[in-house]
Length: 264
Image (cartoon, rainbow, N blue to C red; front, top):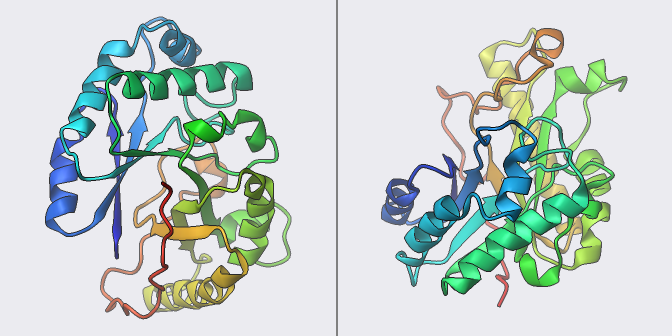
């Protein structure tokens, strides 16, 4: 496993994570989570545009700069096409202005050991939030498949990786950027034993692996080995557990090591 991802609030230092990832010989992918501003949910992006969050952004920028020559992937304002985050499901023009402001603050401080990961969930309106070629190094996507979700949303059977990914891939391939699946996971159907659930995950990922080569821009996959974060649909759909069954022996041959062509 070549890449390690961590979710860090933007008012917390990422340095401990970066040091640990480097110690383990893994490439760091940092998902930065902006906090809600004091005057309400809707102000996160507008406050950023107005420079009200510049102290936090500059501190983060200088900490990342201090890690040079280590290159660091930074995933900012992720899944902006969903309504689950303070920066999500808002006017695309406001989002783009906020994204560009963050990147420009980093550039002004001379941070050049960073690759920006623009990472929508993959909804049909995701391209509206694209901030421009010069502001993006990688495109990130979320591919989390819950068999329970699939059935409840009207499918006759659980979806395959190819069925989910192809639709989202077609949306973003126009940008001609290497694509990282920044959150990749599969949760088995209800009613299975732990061993059966693990086997379901293995089979699903083996099929996914076979389809990776059909997507030439796919540069890497990061498995989301955790329980899903709380969300409004928990009571109706349940809370998926993406973790690989911890008592089973991980087969390193299950997932491929992809050759990643990094941007200039």
